[in-house]
Length: 231
Image (tube, rainbow, N blue to C red; front, side, top):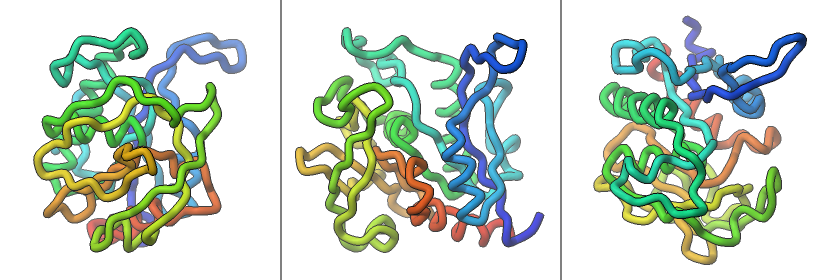
């Protein structure tokens, strides 16, 4: 393994997919994640929600990204489903909770993106608002939101005090899990980022940095921390 090309695991999901002559279930991931990792200096490794993920099976990785996607099952944080909450995907929930648990056990650098930040919060005992307005303008349309970042945080060092991000979500963090610190907020108070206190690098963002290949700051920060493990 080259120290200049750390291995960055990225969670994926199973979807019915058509390609060529085939119409089958496949492990899929938006390409932007792959391109951002490569452009930031890492080698992406896709992690499907099958098999058993634990500290032993992901120990070969140098960092982990929990990707965005569908709603988490409200039952995982003790809530009844809102009528606007999407259908649960237990296999993906279970796989990503296991990935987060393993990463924290290994002190593996971790970036949670949108759903990934929500997975981090729920995995540590937090809860979610099952519906918020104003951050999901239309299917496949991203809301450009200016966020305020707290001083003295990893995110502030990476992005500065104010920055514009691309959001596409209808859920958000409610009760913040023990150990997590809110590090950025939208103008309406929505939690836009958290960090795990005492960890080497555990950052969750509610936005979608993989949508902007011209702004690699978050992925570059993750890869930079991962290099220290790879070396």
